[in-house]
Length: 521
Image (tube, rainbow, N blue to C red; front, side, top):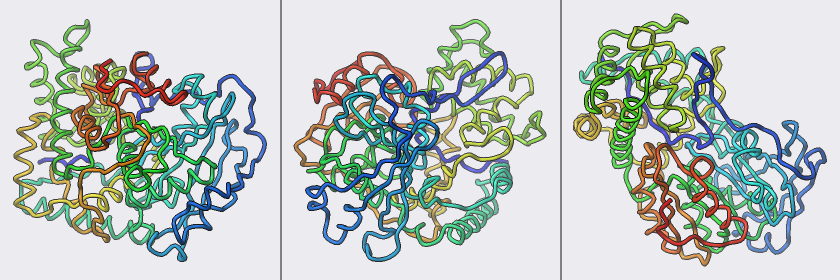
């Protein structure tokens, strides 16, 4: 029996799994403390629209660009606001929704706002800034900018996609399907159809309007209500797709834009999945090579042997699911999710080593904890976000997907060749969207940008979620851009790599100094 296919998503750059003590595992986000400077968060502030910015609003959207936004003290040290946007940009006079935003005021002489998206789709920019403002950004950037994190439409606090209770999510993750049989494939399709109906019923009509183009239009309204004539933006992973989409729609409004862990907007969903499968296979090999060079590694032999031991462990769990200490059954999909989560950050590799060592002696509890971290599930059984549902809903609108049985079976074979360790678990993604109530609204194509402001694109050579070649492709599509490459492991670079990347990005954001194209750090 095989488990339900695993949706792989570019995750927030701020998220890292680390080993805390001998056996404790926790999701580590940067601390919430603000850096030095005047704390202006305790006073409500009303942002009155700049007439010149309102004058440039697209026709029919003037009332949204001219709205007065009240930033109230929140989360102890920050300011929060709700920004009104059209639910459907084709009908701006119709229903509206609220976009939740959180602001960390600048700690020095402010030059503007820096809007931040940490990835996903489905990750919360609100949480990213709340958790990472104090340590993820340099003092120079904190002095120069109000950091503004927002939840894109469909995400957490902003008209969220809602589908299941926490107990139902646990039950869905624990299900097992034999997708190599017609009956198994029919079962997963029936279950996904039922979930789609729940999402439609509980979320409402906004479910058909959470595509990335609509989110990019929201970003321009956010730019306007913080009174910035140009958008200053930092996007990680999926956030690079949101950023490049914005640049194509509003080229004249681009200010300083950094796109780290780039997605290639020209590729299909199937090409995206294949690229990730190869990159995760490369990442597990890099991890095994590192593990074998350290004392206490539970693997043995050379890299090929170590990787095969991991594959044998996955196969054993496929054959006989294991029970964790909390009584939950761990199927192969959950086990593989636990393997994948720490590959996003090489600082999390010691946690993977601990989990593998325990699993090889029969205890899958730590691997389950890693899988839960990847699914945003707390140890008390509650899920802290709707990221899984938002991920699926946004992707179903952004990408046409192959859902023909023969095509999905052929894709499984290709993915297994691309990644013998993980490939199968990346297959059958089309089952998620075939009965989705709203069809895709976008055809993948190269992004077009003719703005005057150079954009900085960053890739990481060992990135498992956004392969480094995607950054090179995006840089070429944008034209007026510079490419930075970090020779490192893990997902994204700025804020977790080295001073070469950090200084180059900081100089660009603070002073506008564009790094030399094709700089390798």
